Image (spheres, rainbow, N blue to C red):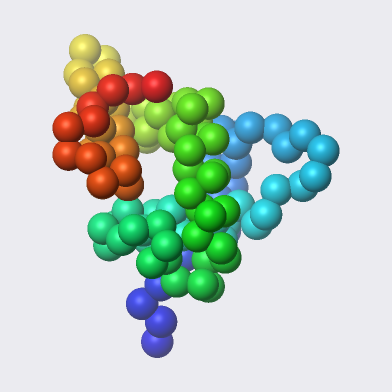
Length: 116
């Protein structure tokens, strides 16, 4: 049995409305790349240490950086926090805390806490 993490088809369909439109060349498999980003985050790995099952580590890194700059992950987190029933006054705080933790882990920085 593999220890790799894979988003389910249902999870990908739930997240799909947040994905930016692809212009020109179609994107590499979203499920594979996003599963790889989650795996790297959950295991505290460097991008280059991501298992090859997720594709090239450069693809994982580039997608994370591009979608971070576009606010894709922030919007996903905000929606999930709202669905979890967090009261409105605390939603932004929870999103900021989650986002800072994610960005800090993936960038190797412990002090980076800004939302982009």
